[in-house]
Length: 368
Image: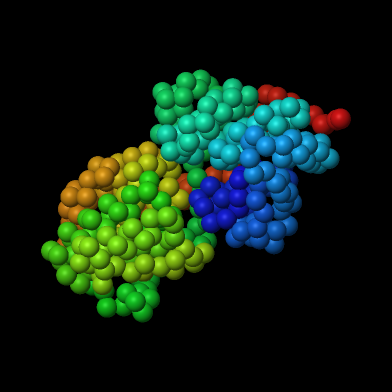
């Protein structure tokens, strides 16, 4: 269960898992609050059963209707496991599934709770208590739940994100027309939200391009920060060196246009976009937050810099601009280690978690 099935990273993980689970053991159904979206259509085409649970508020009467709809669906389809993937689904789905008698109810924690509104953080304490287990996507999230949210360590289970290595893999560096004159392309493919820290990248690039003319910055994505970022590029006198592209489903094509991929997040768990860039053969630079250091081994598979430090990021960029051999080595090492993060490997890990809970709780028919 997830709030929506659009373009986000969590939505992508739900879709990848539903497609990759062993069909001999599991028949996944996917529930969402808002139907439609890229992942919704992708799953429909693959024949995955989909159900929309229309919920717009946790306090209005519609929550009673939504609970009844979910309860009926769970019982009619004999659902043995409910796994919620984001905080709205945790808050609604965990209590509703437990009340419905579902044998196994799992929640997820895929980001730091400090970015959630405070009233939702209080409700998540209830879902923590009610869930049989909580799945995290990196060790940083495990520590966050234990240290900041007082969740017992034994309740937490790790399953790293997975990506489709048939889509994301090394390829020739092909420049689109707007970048074909670039000496080197620095880029980010990201939702343009404040916590993604793209403004730090713009500041760092402004320093780097003054020292190394001819480079270009590609920012691919949409979000509330788009106008602010464009305005800042104008203020810094680099608007002509920055290419803004809207969000697209052709992520791999843009990654193959990037030489140095930057993830400057102020808050991050385990980044899909960072994994995809590494798999596509980009040299990567990431902020030293959340799960980024679990993916990027300093000097081996990429470079790290301190959160919000544009000056340090600029120095990292200059190092990679000037040292092609280092760029190539980091990119090769990163791409070579991505098998452990394939969709199949992630699904196998998640399947192991599901099976362990089924053995413990005992699958059984759901009766009225």
